Image (tube, rainbow, N blue to C red; front, side, top):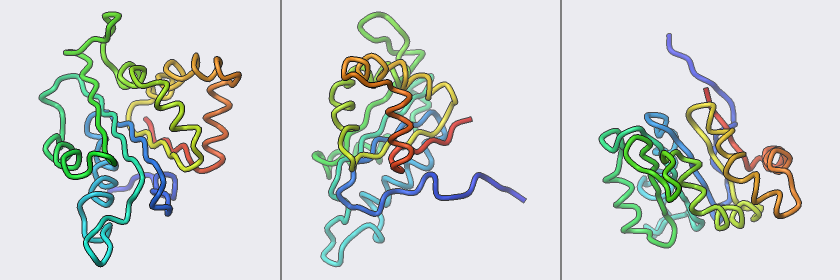
Length: 174
């Protein structure tokens, strides 16, 4: 018998105008892949006229140690090509990429390049964050958004808790 976590923690919002920020490491891209297929590919995510039900922004951050470990790049490229205003993706390849300061490129390092834009997006009550992968990703979020939250007169952990209470911050880490 195979089991896994159950419940509603990782369900997508019902609102087709919602924004979805997805963070995944390695093979834990699987839930995000299912989201993107629903939003951009599968029949169930389409209207009767063939247009997509989803009208928000979906932004994927995927972290892997080596570029040969990147999964589904062809699908990400296709979604970006078909839905350039609705889909973005960024990869963090820790053993091959470095940021401007010479640090290894982890998800939080990549997100830091867009910290202001992501922070603004998270202020929107229609934005949801989905995090799947290594437990260290939570600390990475604090590292990335702690300073910007402080600049806004907020504490990142309190802000994340507020998002969680509003069912906008979804975490499945191990």
